[in-house]
Length: 277
Image 1 (cartoon, rainbow, N blue to C red):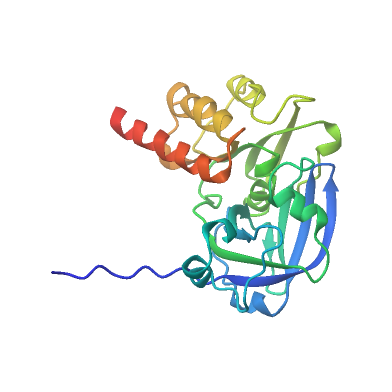
Image 2 (cartoon, rainbow, N blue to C red):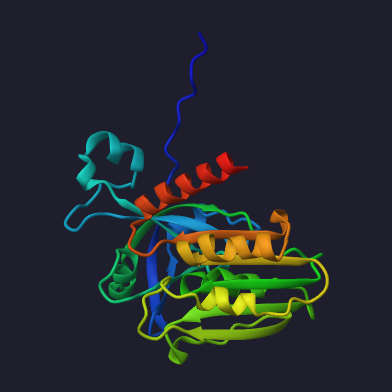
C-alpha cells in the first residue's frame, strides 16, 4: 500500500505595519516591513496575491506564528480567518497592500482602517497567474475598486505605447485616482453612487458598447463575482469570441458572501461549467 504524502501547512511570514495612507475615501494603503520580510520571495506576476491571517478579537498566538500548530491545538473558533489580497508593490524593503474599506463591513478593511505602526500581520504566499503579455496588440483591464491594486500593477508593466483600455467601477468621482503606465491608456471611471458594489450592470453595459481595436487582446477582468463571472465572462467568451487563453477572469469576492462561502460558490460554478462542456 502506497503511503499518502503528508501535506504541510505553508509557513507564514509575519510582517510589521510601517505606515498607512488613505488613498481615497474607500481605499487604504498599508505598508509592511520588518525582519519577516526577508522570507518573502516575490514572483513575476502583477496579480500576485497573499493570504492574510486575521485572528479573532482577544485571541493571541504563540511566537513564531505557526498555522499548523494553531489548527492542531486550538478550537476552530480561535483559528485565524484568511483573506486574499493583491500585493500592490514589493521592493525588497517594503511590501504594499491596498485595502478596500466600506465602514465596519468585513474583516480586512476595518483592520486596515485601525492599523498602526508596529502592528503585526501574518500572511502566506505569494501566488499568482497573470501579467500583461508583452506580445499582445492591446490590453483590456476591467474591474471594481477591489481590482484597482492589480490593475495598477499591471499598467506599470504594459510595454511603452501599447494601447490599454481601462474600465473601473467605483462609488463616485472622489474615488478616481491617477494610475501610471508607459502604455497608451484610455481610462473610463463608472460611478455607481449609492448602489452596493456588484449590484449594477455598469461594467457589462459599458464593455458591451465598446469598440474593440483590431489585433490580439490580453484581458484582465476581475472584481465582484456576479458582475465578472455571470455577466462579463459570457459576453467576452461568447459574444466577443475571445479565446480563453487571452483572458484572466475571475471574481475576487461576491456580494453578501464571506470569502469562505465565495470559494464554495466558485467551485460550484466551475463544476457546472465542466458538466456543460
